[in-house]
Length: 267
Length: 254
Image 1 (cartoon, chains in turn green, orange):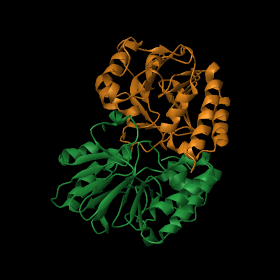
Image 2 (cartoon, one colour; image 1 turned 180 degrees about the vertical axis):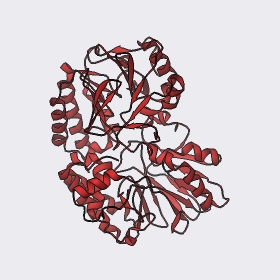
Image 3 (cartoon, each protein chain N blue to C red; image 1 turned 60 degrees about the horizontal axis):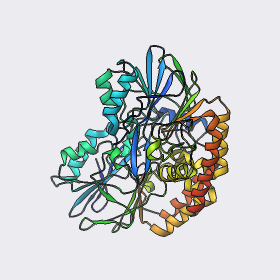
Image 4 (cartoon, rainbow over the protein chains, first blue to last red; image 1 turned 90 degrees about the vertical axis):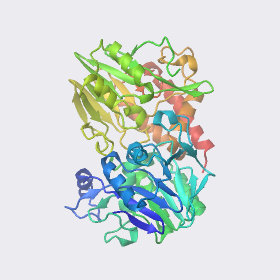
């Protein structure tokens, strides 16, 4: 069942398959937060913004096609889906686009403006947005931004004004243990700390092993200053609603950990 | 026109590896390849990547011609980005349920629950051929692997080693480019494709890349998004690439 994380903002989560390979790796390196025997999952998140109009941000992966349609139906409760926005055309984020548009044929597809290869993703007719563009849903107001930490070049981040929410997509994700689905970061019983974030970023943002640490940390400082979010809603992690600046500091440590310790694996 | 008329159905790189070059025009005289490569492994045909649905008809036609109608027996994916994996259902309808080797990600999440999984750092025998799956220093998606074919010493790479080639350079290898590679087009490709390079430490990155290439004999670097680079042109490309990375870092200062 989706969870409402702020009035009108609903969190839809695909918990994903058990990842025994990640669990073995955690045991091998003695990750302090992991309890052997517990399942490990890397979630996919989508967020439905329901003001006077509605917008879904990302689609979950093709493995959750029935789930996203059912969860949407639950949250929309008979209302129309007005917009489907894709953070980037990556399979785990956009893999159910056509299923959703078949079910909601009146929805406008929204995609990142960046790049010149939209045709290669069937996005040539999408409404393209980027820095400076906003969308007023009536009661909720969305702003689109360049993605600072990303995988695919054709990517965007989003903020929602009334909640102060930043959606940094692939950044600030982490692996979950069973029972940790749809929990706010402050509701976890086990630590949500640098080690856990480094496990994720050492896989998804493996390129951090090749970065200039000081330069990358300076970018994180700039992001914290620019957005000053009250909430963070990553595509692969828990929603953060408390003590947000601490997470930016943790991400600076994550960069250092990956740059010096190398890649932790793949997803 | 996506791919220039008159382009050969395939461009031989080695005795048993050929390039099926497809072109996507970016405008203003710049283009990018979105290609596949064919390995003839005895009686079996292995395809590296499936290409984009944008080139589907052309790819089916050209693969059919290149294989005398036999089609493909195994498909190995560098990663599951749509321009690399967009033709799997169409190819299966055409050539049956051939073997699919997914890149190192979770196949179900990548929409390929029926695929055999590769692992970075591991090797697989595919249609009798041994392929090594390498950790790619120049990539964007976590689940990307570079694929090294021990039989031909060809290294298949995505998304790095690309090139924004000119209109008349479609389907030309480094041995056929009249004036070789131009630094500007190596730079623009990597600037626009691998956004994270703005944070890179060029010395660290290029050190890892050169080490990887020195660890094994490489006859060709075969990029999905570039013009194939023959061994004798690799040092020149790497020098231009390093200059390009340094320029990206310089121009996109935080």
